[in-house]
Image (cartoon, rainbow, N blue to C red; front, side, top):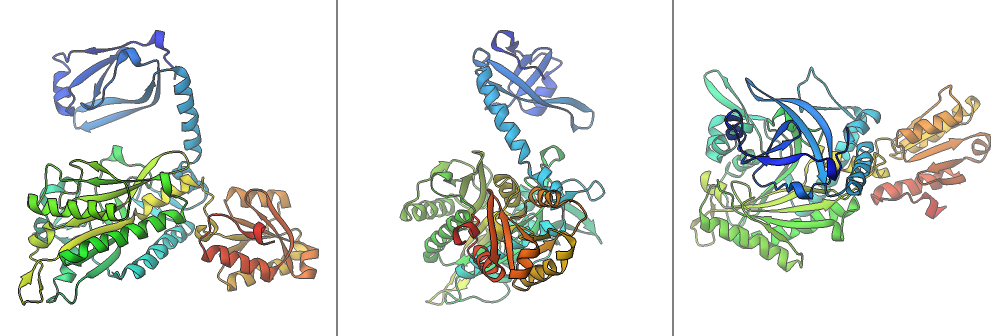
Length: 505
C-alpha cells in the first residue's frame, strides 16, 4: 500500500447524507470522514484533524458483515503527523509480527486452531500443554500461600442461576444458552456462581471466615468473530480464578496480600517498577447493588493501594457490573501495556444470593466477596509471554529444557545415558539422533527455542562430561554431567530469567 504524504492527503469531514444515515445510526457514529473515494465512520471519542495528518498507511482490507444484508469493506490503517513517525511505527510493527504468538504457536508446535472445532477455541498440543501446566503450577503455589483451596465446578448451569447472579440480564449477549428438556441452560462465562454455591452449602460462622476458593476454570464468552485474535481473544479460555468470602474487617488485608503476590508473580517474568501501572475502576452505568456498597468497596481498594505505597489512577465507570476493581497492567519488551491481574470487591452478589454468616453476637451478617485473578486468562498470559520472549521462554517454563545431540552415531549409547540421567532428575529432555549434519541438528534446536543444547562426542563419553551450548552464545566445554544437572535444576527451581550455566562454569 502506498504511504500518503502530507501534500497528497485527501481527507475531509463531510455531513452524513441520506444514503449513509442508516449506517451511521446503526454503527453509532457521529462523524463521517471522506478518505479518497471512501467514507469512514469514526467512533465518537476519536478525533481526527486533517491538518495534522501527514502520512497514512492502510494495513489491512477485509470484508465485514455486521448484520445480514449489511456488507461493508473494513480498511484498517494508521495515521501519523509525519512520514518518519510512520516509518518508525512500521518498523515496530515488523518486529511485533516476528513475535506473533500465532506464528510461534505453529512453529514451536504449541497449539492450533481448527476450522472443524470452531472459531476462537484453542487446542493445545503436548508442548503447549506443558507451558499451560507450568503457569498453573506457579499459581497453585501462590494459592497455597494465600490460603485458597482448589475446587472444580461444572461448565453448564441452569439459566435460573445466571438470572440470580445478574449475568443473564447484563451479560446475555456473550453467553451460550440452550434449551434442554424444556429448561434453559447456560455455559458459564464466569466461575463465581459455582463458588457461591459451595459457600452456601452449609451454615457459616464468623470463625469460619475467610473462606477462600480457587479454580482453574474454563469459561466461555461468545465474542464476535471479528474480535477473535489468537490466544489473546478467545471464546473459551481458562482463568486462574479465586473467590474469598470475608467479614468486612478482613477485606483490606486480603486485598493487600493479593496485590503483593501479583507483584511477585509479574517479577518472575521480568515485569516490575516503571513497567507496572495500577488502575482502580469505578461504578459503571449498568450495575447491581447500592451506591453505598460501591462507595465502601471502592474505598477499601484505594486504601489498600495507599497503605502499600503503590500509586494508581482512576478509571471512572469501568468497573465490573457487580463491583469496583483494581487492574494491574504491565509493559512488555515491545512497549505494549497488558492487563491480566484483577481484584474486585463485591457487596452485591452476596446480597443477591442471600449469603450469610453468624457473627459473635449471634446475629446474621452478610459476607463480602473478593473476586481475583492473578494471571487472568492462562491463554492470554501465555500469548503475552511468548511474544515478550520471542518464543525463547525461560528454561523453567520451556516445554523442552535440554536436547542431547551426539556428534556421531557411535556416540548414541552415551547420548542416551545422558538423556536418561537428566530425565531421571526431572529435566524435560529429548534427543536428536537424525541423519543430518551436526550443524543442521544444532540449528534445528535453536529454531525450536530449546534453552540448552547438550553436545556429546568421544571425549565427553570417556570423561562422563557434556559440552553445553545455550542462548546468547553460551558455550561451556567438558562440564561434568552431574554438575550441569545440578546447575540446571537450580535454574529451574529459582525460575530464573537467565541461563546460569555460564556463571557457574
